[in-house]
Image 1 (spheres, rainbow, N blue to C red):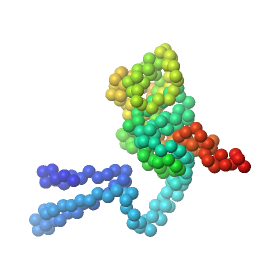
Image 2 (image 1 turned 135 degrees about the vertical axis):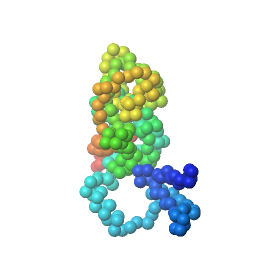
Image 3 (image 1 turned 90 degrees about the vertical axis):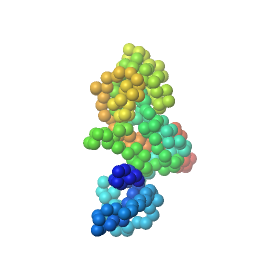
Length: 239
Protein backbone atom coordinates (compact mmCIF):
# COMPACT_ATOMS: atom_id res chain seq x y z
CA UNK A 1 0.00 0.00 0.00
CA UNK A 2 1.22 3.49 -0.88
CA UNK A 3 -0.02 6.98 -0.16
CA UNK A 4 0.45 9.17 -3.21
CA UNK A 5 -0.52 12.81 -2.76
CA UNK A 6 -3.06 11.84 -0.12
CA UNK A 7 -4.53 9.00 -2.20
CA UNK A 8 -4.29 5.44 -0.89
CA UNK A 9 -3.23 3.01 -3.64
CA UNK A 10 -3.46 -0.76 -3.24
CA UNK A 11 -2.25 -3.44 -5.61
CA UNK A 12 -4.28 -6.52 -4.64
CA UNK A 13 -3.58 -10.03 -5.81
CA UNK A 14 -5.40 -11.41 -8.86
CA UNK A 15 -7.17 -14.54 -10.09
CA UNK A 16 -8.61 -15.02 -6.56
CA UNK A 17 -5.14 -15.90 -5.26
CA UNK A 18 -5.25 -13.29 -2.53
CA UNK A 19 -7.45 -10.97 -0.50
CA UNK A 20 -6.58 -7.49 0.73
CA UNK A 21 -8.37 -5.99 3.73
CA UNK A 22 -8.23 -2.21 4.11
CA UNK A 23 -9.26 -0.58 7.41
CA UNK A 24 -9.87 3.16 7.56
CA UNK A 25 -10.32 5.35 10.65
CA UNK A 26 -12.40 8.34 9.57
CA UNK A 27 -13.16 11.59 11.36
CA UNK A 28 -16.84 12.02 10.52
CA UNK A 29 -16.85 15.67 11.48
CA UNK A 30 -14.15 16.60 8.99
CA UNK A 31 -14.73 13.65 6.64
CA UNK A 32 -11.03 12.91 6.56
CA UNK A 33 -9.03 9.73 6.99
CA UNK A 34 -7.11 9.72 10.25
CA UNK A 35 -5.35 6.40 9.85
CA UNK A 36 -5.28 3.46 7.45
CA UNK A 37 -4.13 -0.15 7.77
CA UNK A 38 -4.12 -3.07 5.41
CA UNK A 39 -3.47 -6.80 5.51
CA UNK A 40 -2.85 -9.19 2.64
CA UNK A 41 -4.01 -12.81 2.84
CA UNK A 42 -3.24 -15.67 0.49
CA UNK A 43 -6.43 -17.50 -0.41
CA UNK A 44 -4.87 -20.92 0.08
CA UNK A 45 -4.02 -20.01 3.69
CA UNK A 46 -7.65 -19.30 4.61
CA UNK A 47 -8.85 -22.40 6.47
CA UNK A 48 -12.21 -21.31 7.86
CA UNK A 49 -15.06 -22.48 5.64
CA UNK A 50 -18.61 -21.12 5.49
CA UNK A 51 -20.59 -24.35 5.13
CA UNK A 52 -23.59 -22.78 3.40
CA UNK A 53 -21.44 -20.90 0.90
CA UNK A 54 -19.33 -24.01 0.25
CA UNK A 55 -22.49 -25.95 -0.66
CA UNK A 56 -23.39 -23.28 -3.20
CA UNK A 57 -19.90 -23.39 -4.68
CA UNK A 58 -20.09 -27.19 -4.91
CA UNK A 59 -23.40 -26.91 -6.80
CA UNK A 60 -21.87 -24.50 -9.33
CA UNK A 61 -18.79 -26.70 -9.78
CA UNK A 62 -20.91 -29.80 -10.26
CA UNK A 63 -22.99 -28.04 -12.89
CA UNK A 64 -20.23 -26.37 -14.91
CA UNK A 65 -17.04 -28.30 -14.07
CA UNK A 66 -18.00 -31.83 -12.99
CA UNK A 67 -14.49 -33.14 -13.73
CA UNK A 68 -12.67 -30.46 -11.70
CA UNK A 69 -11.40 -32.87 -9.03
CA UNK A 70 -11.06 -35.85 -11.34
CA UNK A 71 -7.54 -37.21 -11.77
CA UNK A 72 -6.83 -37.05 -15.50
CA UNK A 73 -3.20 -38.14 -15.49
CA UNK A 74 -0.10 -38.77 -13.42
CA UNK A 75 3.26 -37.00 -13.33
CA UNK A 76 6.21 -39.22 -12.43
CA UNK A 77 9.14 -36.80 -12.13
CA UNK A 78 9.10 -33.60 -10.09
CA UNK A 79 10.01 -30.62 -12.25
CA UNK A 80 11.22 -27.08 -11.93
CA UNK A 81 8.53 -24.59 -13.01
CA UNK A 82 10.07 -23.92 -16.43
CA UNK A 83 10.60 -27.64 -17.13
CA UNK A 84 6.84 -28.00 -17.47
CA UNK A 85 7.16 -26.35 -20.87
CA UNK A 86 8.54 -29.62 -22.21
CA UNK A 87 5.36 -31.40 -21.08
CA UNK A 88 3.22 -28.71 -22.69
CA UNK A 89 5.22 -29.01 -25.92
CA UNK A 90 4.79 -32.80 -25.89
CA UNK A 91 1.03 -32.35 -25.53
CA UNK A 92 0.78 -29.89 -28.43
CA UNK A 93 3.01 -31.98 -30.69
CA UNK A 94 1.07 -35.16 -29.98
CA UNK A 95 -2.40 -33.69 -30.50
CA UNK A 96 -2.19 -31.18 -33.34
CA UNK A 97 -0.39 -32.88 -36.25
CA UNK A 98 2.16 -30.11 -36.82
CA UNK A 99 5.76 -30.19 -37.95
CA UNK A 100 7.14 -28.38 -34.90
CA UNK A 101 6.38 -26.77 -31.54
CA UNK A 102 8.42 -23.82 -30.22
CA UNK A 103 7.50 -22.49 -26.76
CA UNK A 104 8.89 -19.95 -24.30
CA UNK A 105 9.61 -21.60 -20.89
CA UNK A 106 8.90 -18.34 -19.05
CA UNK A 107 5.29 -18.37 -20.28
CA UNK A 108 4.37 -22.02 -19.73
CA UNK A 109 5.41 -22.52 -16.10
CA UNK A 110 3.80 -24.73 -13.48
CA UNK A 111 4.58 -25.53 -9.85
CA UNK A 112 2.68 -28.82 -9.48
CA UNK A 113 4.57 -31.69 -7.86
CA UNK A 114 4.76 -35.23 -9.12
CA UNK A 115 1.71 -37.42 -8.62
CA UNK A 116 -1.96 -37.15 -9.63
CA UNK A 117 -2.92 -34.34 -12.02
CA UNK A 118 -6.51 -33.11 -11.71
CA UNK A 119 -8.39 -30.94 -14.15
CA UNK A 120 -8.45 -28.12 -11.59
CA UNK A 121 -4.69 -28.35 -11.13
CA UNK A 122 -4.22 -28.09 -14.89
CA UNK A 123 -6.55 -25.11 -15.20
CA UNK A 124 -4.97 -23.33 -12.22
CA UNK A 125 -1.49 -23.83 -13.66
CA UNK A 126 -2.40 -22.57 -17.13
CA UNK A 127 -5.16 -20.01 -16.59
CA UNK A 128 -6.35 -18.47 -19.87
CA UNK A 129 -5.75 -14.83 -18.91
CA UNK A 130 -7.45 -13.07 -21.80
CA UNK A 131 -5.58 -10.16 -23.34
CA UNK A 132 -7.47 -8.41 -24.93
CA UNK A 133 -10.83 -9.29 -23.33
CA UNK A 134 -12.93 -11.82 -25.24
CA UNK A 135 -9.87 -13.19 -27.05
CA UNK A 136 -7.85 -16.38 -26.41
CA UNK A 137 -5.55 -16.38 -23.39
CA UNK A 138 -2.13 -14.76 -23.66
CA UNK A 139 -0.50 -18.21 -23.60
CA UNK A 140 -2.94 -19.79 -26.08
CA UNK A 141 -1.65 -21.98 -28.91
CA UNK A 142 -1.66 -20.73 -32.49
CA UNK A 143 -0.62 -22.56 -35.65
CA UNK A 144 1.44 -20.71 -38.22
CA UNK A 145 3.00 -21.66 -41.53
CA UNK A 146 6.58 -20.55 -42.17
CA UNK A 147 9.38 -21.39 -44.57
CA UNK A 148 12.33 -23.49 -43.52
CA UNK A 149 14.54 -20.39 -43.62
CA UNK A 150 12.26 -18.52 -41.24
CA UNK A 151 11.85 -21.50 -38.92
CA UNK A 152 15.62 -21.94 -38.69
CA UNK A 153 15.99 -18.26 -37.79
CA UNK A 154 13.24 -18.48 -35.16
CA UNK A 155 14.84 -21.49 -33.53
CA UNK A 156 18.34 -20.01 -33.59
CA UNK A 157 17.10 -16.80 -31.93
CA UNK A 158 15.60 -18.77 -29.02
CA UNK A 159 17.91 -21.75 -28.36
CA UNK A 160 16.64 -22.10 -24.78
CA UNK A 161 12.99 -22.51 -25.78
CA UNK A 162 11.30 -25.90 -25.77
CA UNK A 163 11.43 -27.43 -29.25
CA UNK A 164 9.84 -30.53 -30.69
CA UNK A 165 9.87 -31.14 -34.40
CA UNK A 166 11.71 -32.21 -37.48
CA UNK A 167 15.39 -32.95 -37.07
CA UNK A 168 16.46 -31.37 -40.36
CA UNK A 169 14.84 -28.18 -41.68
CA UNK A 170 14.75 -27.80 -45.45
CA UNK A 171 15.10 -24.09 -46.38
CA UNK A 172 12.49 -24.03 -49.16
CA UNK A 173 9.87 -26.20 -47.46
CA UNK A 174 6.83 -24.84 -45.58
CA UNK A 175 6.33 -25.96 -41.98
CA UNK A 176 3.34 -25.86 -39.67
CA UNK A 177 4.40 -24.64 -36.23
CA UNK A 178 2.69 -24.18 -32.85
CA UNK A 179 3.57 -20.94 -31.05
CA UNK A 180 2.27 -19.19 -27.95
CA UNK A 181 0.18 -16.06 -28.41
CA UNK A 182 2.86 -13.71 -27.07
CA UNK A 183 5.42 -14.88 -29.61
CA UNK A 184 2.81 -14.80 -32.37
CA UNK A 185 1.90 -11.16 -31.74
CA UNK A 186 5.47 -9.95 -31.17
CA UNK A 187 7.76 -11.76 -33.62
CA UNK A 188 10.14 -8.80 -33.86
CA UNK A 189 10.58 -8.83 -30.07
CA UNK A 190 11.06 -12.59 -29.67
CA UNK A 191 12.79 -13.49 -32.94
CA UNK A 192 14.29 -10.17 -34.05
CA UNK A 193 13.06 -10.76 -37.59
CA UNK A 194 10.10 -9.54 -39.62
CA UNK A 195 7.62 -12.41 -39.98
CA UNK A 196 4.16 -12.33 -41.52
CA UNK A 197 1.81 -14.36 -39.34
CA UNK A 198 -1.37 -13.06 -40.99
CA UNK A 199 -2.68 -16.56 -41.64
CA UNK A 200 -2.18 -17.72 -38.04
CA UNK A 201 -4.96 -19.93 -36.69
CA UNK A 202 -6.04 -20.25 -33.06
CA UNK A 203 -5.77 -23.89 -32.00
CA UNK A 204 -6.60 -24.20 -28.29
CA UNK A 205 -5.94 -22.92 -24.80
CA UNK A 206 -3.01 -24.50 -23.00
CA UNK A 207 -5.14 -26.02 -20.24
CA UNK A 208 -7.43 -27.65 -22.82
CA UNK A 209 -4.40 -29.17 -24.52
CA UNK A 210 -2.84 -30.55 -21.33
CA UNK A 211 -6.28 -31.80 -20.25
CA UNK A 212 -6.80 -33.74 -23.49
CA UNK A 213 -3.23 -35.05 -23.53
CA UNK A 214 -3.47 -36.25 -19.91
CA UNK A 215 -6.64 -38.19 -20.72
CA UNK A 216 -4.97 -39.66 -23.79
CA UNK A 217 -1.89 -40.78 -21.87
CA UNK A 218 -3.99 -42.32 -19.11
CA UNK A 219 -6.04 -44.25 -21.68
CA UNK A 220 -2.72 -45.63 -22.92
CA UNK A 221 -1.68 -46.47 -19.32
CA UNK A 222 1.28 -44.08 -19.56
CA UNK A 223 2.55 -41.22 -17.41
CA UNK A 224 1.93 -37.75 -18.81
CA UNK A 225 5.56 -36.66 -18.65
CA UNK A 226 7.60 -39.80 -19.35
CA UNK A 227 7.04 -42.75 -21.64
CA UNK A 228 6.64 -45.33 -18.88
CA UNK A 229 3.63 -47.43 -17.85
CA UNK A 230 1.53 -46.49 -14.84
CA UNK A 231 2.08 -48.81 -11.85
CA UNK A 232 -1.50 -50.15 -11.78
CA UNK A 233 -1.18 -51.00 -15.48
CA UNK A 234 1.93 -53.03 -14.72
CA UNK A 235 0.04 -54.83 -11.98
CA UNK A 236 -2.86 -55.57 -14.32
CA UNK A 237 -0.53 -56.94 -16.98
CA UNK A 238 0.97 -59.37 -14.46
CA UNK A 239 -2.40 -60.81 -13.48
